[in-house]
Length: 271
Ligand SMILES: [Zn+2]
Ligand SMILES: [Zn+2]
Image (cartoon, rainbow, N blue to C red; front, side, top):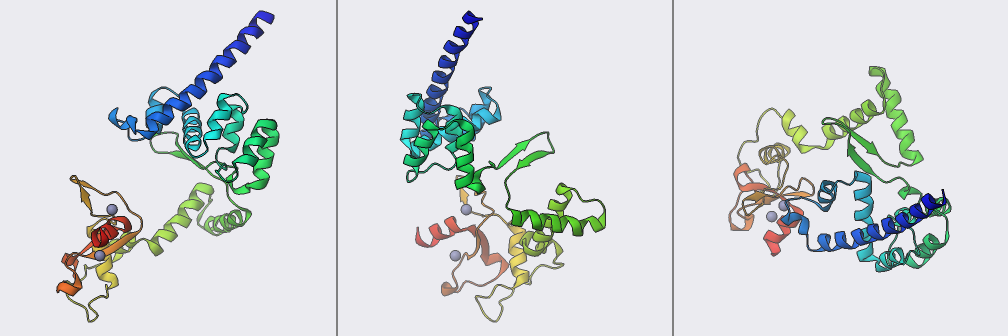
């Protein structure tokens, strides 16, 4: 037994050293975006391709990225002042401003205690948000929510149960459907029966709801900016832009309007 124990101790040492070395290497690959040259979209995809589990890949990457912001984290892991399991506990809340307090806590407290302290100080950060594929068509969604949101969720569940048993998935779907119906211009475009007539309204700046739907529908509610022949994938923070400015006689018509994300819109006007 003694021999086995000694082997275990030695292997753990090697294991920890290997893990910190791996963090350093990943940091370098991350900084030069080297995974792209190897055909991977993200560092995460690359690390997964090395054969590591999602969990391990996620932890290594978050620690390596956090160490760029807080270099003392990696140094203390390397010097074995902080164990990797403790590093994982503080990584989501660690900042350059609070590092003194939390690096010290991670160095001194056992993992359980450390988890309690972090939970006390940052109750909203305790559950990591994850979206994980469990099969082609299904994902597992994990997140922390407040009491207030849980109450709302239960209320929607009660209401939705009128249409048959509503589990959490069905409840979420009902809530999302109702949000999208109300707020998604694409959904509205689907419902709007006719396209906006291409005419100038009385206020040249005013974009009627119909015209807005028509633009959203044609541009698929996505930024239309092209770079090297590839379309920008942004579907958030979209503006409607006049190709020919009103000041130069451009009109508020479907032909003269396009969707641009805030970034590309600003670039166009101020770039
Ligand atoms: Zn514009
Ligand atoms: Zn864009």
